[in-house]
Length: 352
Image (cartoon, rainbow, N blue to C red; front, side):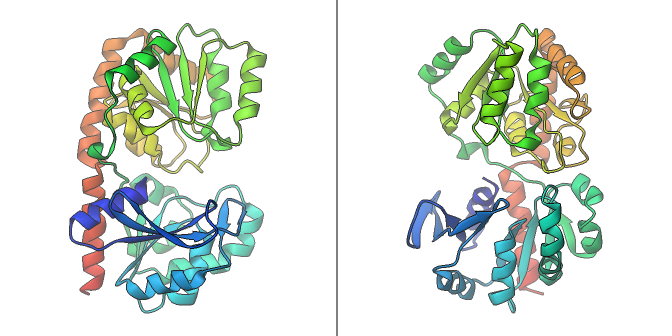
């Protein structure tokens, strides 16, 4: 979503944008149009420690690099480090630094020399929040060439759900509810959300799929939870419908792997109060305690439950926090603002 928003926004400002990515679903390189952007898809050969890799059709990657005036990479993706080492020299290079490598500590020791060369070769590094820039042990070595550009989204790029879809979800869920949206991964803290849900008299909708799904559903069954609604993977129209209908967005991520949380700004865009955990990353840059929502300690079901109860028991308080979240969204997290900041960096590098 972030890449799409940058591409759409910078193209509207006058850039010609192409996106190069890898895909599991194809056998030959192809070109597709996504939101008016040319996306070149290279067949993925394998995935190792969440890094997808290609061995074939690398000439297509080299061809696109030769075409471009400027390259914009996203980190972490070690395959991009290799591409940069092979063909990136001589081009202005920008890197959006999304996250430290948190979990793969053993592989990181092997990857670190390539990573350092990659980061050193960048002309500008973009951190997605001042909080992450301040807390990242990696970025501290590159502060002199790092700019902060918060992630952003464009409300007009989201579909408007019709009345039938809204009515369908309202009928399925019943009364006021809290919403989680995201991939069901280890760092999302959903095990603590399920613990916090015991005995709650309101529904909690979990929208998404992922590697922890079976484990989480087994935990919910063991706890006897009948207030969890597993929505599974949902279309954008359903996501917007749920965001409009919910009383608040709960985001219990508990590890630094959650570097920002685009779902939080989707909730803020929808004027919903936010619940998140203090993990020293961009989540607390988006969600300001007492202003846009509630921030609680990580991996703490009791604190999470107290925050959820507060939003559900005090709808006027929830509405006021949601208004604050929307005001902060308009000030800091629009796709237009992010794209303009990126475009300004591109122009600076190309005209230096």
